[in-house]
Length: 321
Image (cartoon, rainbow, N blue to C red; front, side, top):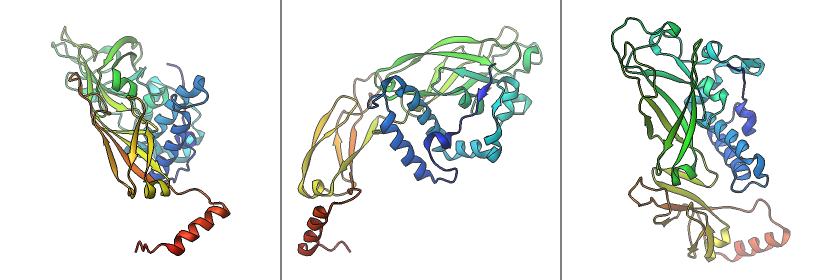
């Protein structure tokens, strides 16, 4: 297997290794809003760049994955290239037990080769354990092990369903690649599992093969946060818009719509847009979209603006404390 280049996820997001989870989240959102294919100026490179940003956040935004990634610490800066296959297996924090099954390399899951090599897939459900090219111990008829992995699903795929071509290769000498087509059903949500029958390890002694289980990771979106079939959208308002009221455009996966914001709207107010979320399977129904108000202060004020703020401070009887 070809060598796999180390990916510095901290460098991808532009944050320090000591960055807090909140700093990691803010860095991702800033970059995602710049590079998402729907809004990026350079469409030719946007998709690949966005996937790189998403993968970095998938690792650094998850405390457990981040801990595994950080295990080698400063040594990772000098790791250079490391080999896949048997050599790559040394980089799995959980590998090593003989009965844990064969490690697998995937292509087409939406994650890079580096992610697959470090957070790679293994056969670890039921069935019998494979022990390298010689096969499993004994000759009794047994079902093959199931294979588990993760798959990165885009919001568009969750909205419309799709098919994905995957390449699966055991990381053992002589392990043969197989290319398969996986159906991603419309309405799939974060954490659900796609089962592909018969695509696991071969059985023993004429036994049936195991299955392939792909746990869905929903690709992070710069504007929407998914919770089940519902979506949450940050509705950013200027202070005067929240005080005086306004009408603002709101993005939804179904197209742009408008919300009338009443005067005196407070931070955290939620506007519910019924049926503007993700599809609920084959039912024909959709979840809702909740536009959550975020009042945003101007980064700086001109002298004239400061005079207006001061005049308001001098005349207002409002005391927030």
